[in-house]
Image (cartoon, rainbow, N blue to C red):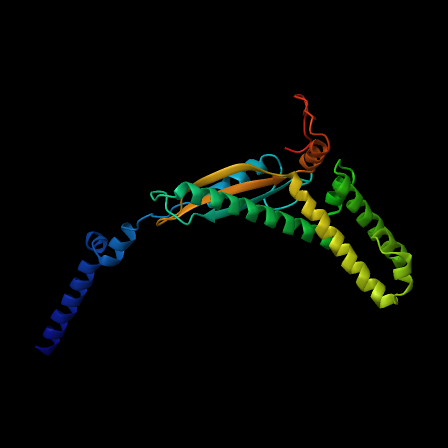
Length: 252
């Protein structure tokens, strides 16, 4: 009798397991239902859309976003959100402020990256482009850096002289002070040179729209090109200058 009861209990357990493993029943369980009811509520923000667009567009030209390209161009994205949602009064002013902040952020990132490239020694081609450009200030500073960097290992005194340190000042320094002065002057010249690159910057793409909740985002893509910097310098020197219609830039 005891054996019969044990057998019946075993059969009941097996039957229960079989029922639980039935596909139709499994499909109705909370665990499975939850996987079928996942909501795709992800919203691509304007800065993400712009980033994806620019990476795709630039890759077709053999270029990249956020780096110094072979032709000297640089593309950087900046973004900012408005202080007021799009359905409130004062939104237009808030949107314009956000645009200005996004533009400023892009410029700052671009100049910071350019400075890092030059200080690390990777920006030789950039320095060469500036030295051969039409911007007299950039040409002078780039030439100073090129000459100083070329001769510093053989004559620190001459390198300091190229960077604007007088012979009297050089004569008063020992070796360690000369080395410290060279690093200071070299970096100061790079900083000044890079600051002038803002003349070669222009916004080439804008993306804006809702960014979740009540936020409205403005994103801009800033482009720097050595040709644009040269052109800006020419126009500044000659306000009557008109760009020929057939003028073609090396960078695109």
